[in-house]
Length: 353
Image (cartoon, rainbow, N blue to C red; front, side, top):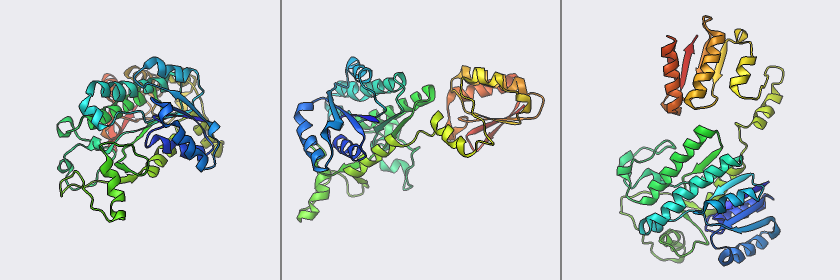
């Protein structure tokens, strides 16, 4: 197995590489400046007793689409951890460059995931998607579904991270690819280069040295810190986690229930026509998410099950897992055929044939 780590010589990226090597996984490291930082990483590889030959290096400008494609064309890559990103100061001082790195570069990686059928992409989003005004959420605990609207953001960095998340969800919905992301809080630990976040290091080190800590927050602000090794571990775990939506995972599950379940792989447009739907009492529909695909699947199912009071349960309908094209297709189809539609658990559309 080979994992591509973009920005693999950076503060978090270098820790990710070391953790992958500890699991005996081959790593392809890309970075804008290989020469400057390679020696330090290789020194750390030797310290953990691993073979530095398990790491390949390639210079990559994440704003150059051709360079990105060459990486995927010329290497067998199983998973990707994308950490090539412009930090907050770049976003404010040079928004054009930051947009090329953070928006165009990240979206280019999304394109590669689809085109080269990569098993999983993981990238680091940020707690900054929650915005600059803590009072926006009150005193309650934040959830993965929370984020702040544009009017509640102060820094460009957080808005760019939010757009990355939005684009990731679009690629998941449209292409069915496996993309996961974390929202790290303030990351501290050894190895950070001199940046505007040096105060994060002082927060951890100064008390141990008997020195005061000067934090750039108001006295009422609250925040979380995460140790860099823990942040890296999160990313590695996500990258290696089994894809529960893959055919291989489904087949593995079916081995346990082989007497009760039959797996038919293929396009629903063909597969559903080969099934005797008269013998089917219940269908859970969670196939393609485009308007045309959902409509086509419903037409085939309804044609084989109508007038029998059977149930078609469709996912991604309510606000708990909302996809606009799925909702529109279901609404149009049930209205056209005068079918009863029930919303269940704010997520599923129940259609009675």
